[in-house]
Length: 123
Image 1: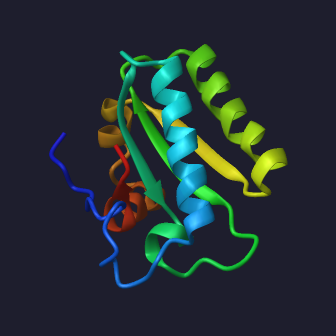
Image 2 (image 1 turned 180 degrees about the horizontal axis):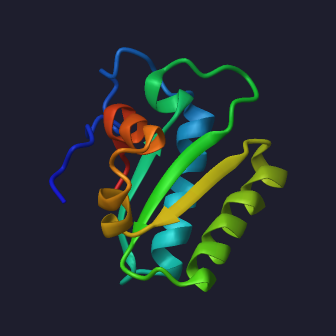
Image 3 (image 1 turned 90 degrees about the horizontal axis):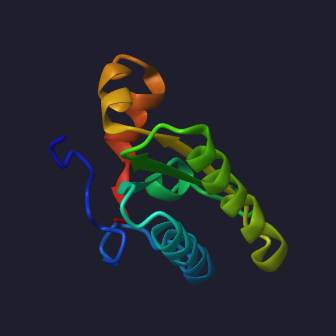
């Protein structure tokens, strides 16, 4: 998969700033995923309102995780990690998990087109 996502997550020149508390949650979530599945994670993409810069208080954080393994166990565990963040930080992470092949096969879907257009590579 070519790198079609911009890599400005750690830059401050996105044209807007991701709030520091949200950025901290994204980084913590990313570290948890990479620690749990070090050999299975291919890429982690921020998409949705925080990637576009049109977020508001109460917006959830949309994260797409590309894995090498399409097992339900990995999907379930990653989604649960996203839910586990909320009680501590009050920020909801909405995680979607798929393989790069699934992403390519769904390229005509509006969701995939929006992620491709707005997505910011975190890892």
